[in-house]
Length: 74
Image (cartoon, rainbow, N blue to C red):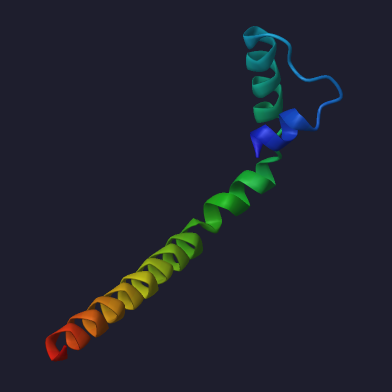
């Protein structure tokens, strides 16, 4: 989010100090409602990530199981 805000500025920061100032300005300009919404959505995001990881593990297990099953018969 901060990277996009910095990139959208008319003049990009030219020095590390300019970048530091720009980041602080952008950080301080994030609306509180956006922060509140991000915090409130964390439980849903966490659940979605866990479900995705479980699906990936399940697919990986199925592939490994299929490979082992086929190798036992060849």
